[in-house]
Length: 168
Image (cartoon, rainbow, N blue to C red):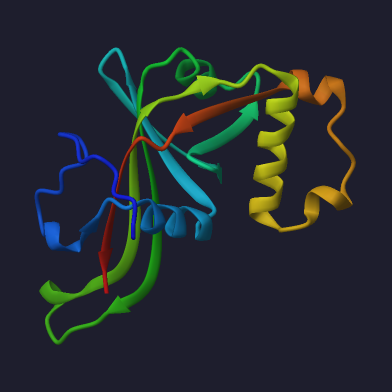
């Protein structure tokens, strides 16, 4: 039995809703396969969309970067964020340019990011990020130094409001 997340006003699929899903397994499968997310947010009416690496651990996503990052400082204040991951599975070529398309799988997550301050939680997040890129890699590298931990910002985003859309 698939666990279905609650559909919200923000996750309701308006166009081609039959391509959508809200279950945990579909969401996790796409997130676990991707490497780059795009994080969207607005400050004083100015929109920003930033690509970055991410990792999923349970029902949370982690992103990280420099302590000097304006994006991470802003997101760490708890503003609304929209995070997307898209996997392209193939190009759809047609006799008409109008009908060209792509087969894709995508996840859209809405929420508010929170700063990860506690040392052990931060290390666990960095481990998840490393393991997401190359499984087993964390065991092959040295642990981050205290200085590196101080210079690194880690944010977590709960997977509470999320949807999937797939074209095959």
